Image (cartoon, rainbow, N blue to C red; front, side):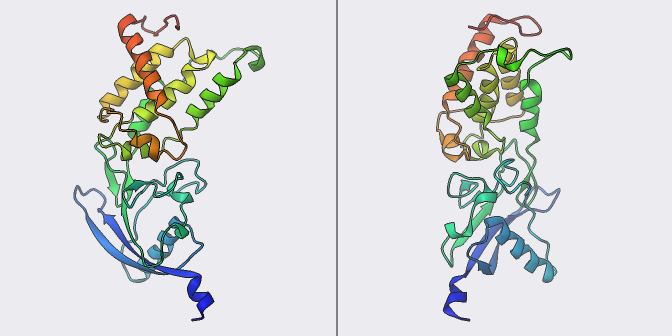
Length: 265
């Protein structure tokens, strides 16, 4: 092999959490991934490793992969102790050039009490869906809608709402939190609607229902470690947690009718 060819490939050791489907216990297994193109993405490396395992008659490593464009976040894996791995990006955007030749890479699932393991690196994150279903929406009638431009929204408010709506629901914040809290996710989903005029009528019932659903799904409590913010591939700020807490206090103290209608303050 020429020096140029040698430089274009790399060899790594991958220590992967293997847990059979339906089993409650698993273990780490080491694999040698050889001849990986240096310009390959991290998930491409796993694809190559899986092809080798299949050729050897072994069960391939199960991991989730969908858009591979950093849009959906279903690819989430804890890489060397960091949700999604080094860098502020999703796992599907992680590149092998982020690792040194001969590196030992440890892979774990986004496993918390609210994210049970399905198989290997795949977890059930439907608990996040249940939080959204509880109140992450606005109620509108089916009749004619007003012209969007007829509702003025200040530029700073619009940008703030867009920043909150950037959350892709990948669950990295939950995996990063020592308590397995989903406060960053929930606050982002609640705040991007609370900031806009269309979200005001249900602002307080929304936050109450979403927080209650979050507790029902057995997510942990927030202790302001800010690990969630540091691990979020979209840079969601923990300032939204404070805002959600303020709205939740108002919703708890002042209440509201069954629809949650209450004057926004």
